[in-house]
Length: 176
Image 1 (cartoon, rainbow, N blue to C red):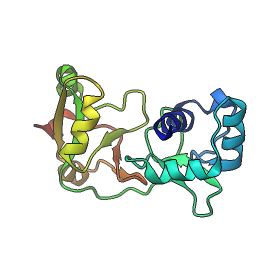
Image 2: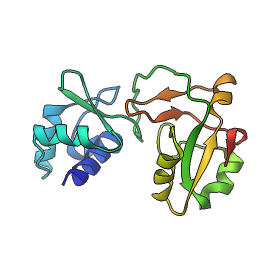
Image 3: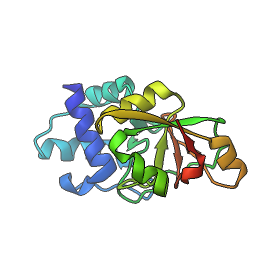
């Protein structure tokens, strides 16, 4: 049940709040009461306790509750325009990106692009990147020379859940 709720929340908070007539503010926050009421109206019965459990137990920490518990947002992965209000940060020297092997020619020609999302997502370890890559086909993990990118003036942000974000990774910073 919580996996189903997590997928529903991901869809609504990252991609399509309008499907349940939910409004997000400019920073991606939704009122928890409004979310629960609109989800119920859409046939999804989620109570506050269940919502808190899904946020706390999500293995990828996809959601963030505000300090007062009255607002919720997706930590990253938005295809809709939101400003997460994250400060630029210095990344670790090396980050990782999981993808399907069928994407490699395009990636090494154009670099990593955000696709339907606002930012490119990078992991701090190869294991997590491999899990991400599995969702798209036969996985492969790319190393990203994030330290050199940062030194060259490219920006990084760290999402609430620890995922590293950047606008684009030029191919020259990629290796196996």
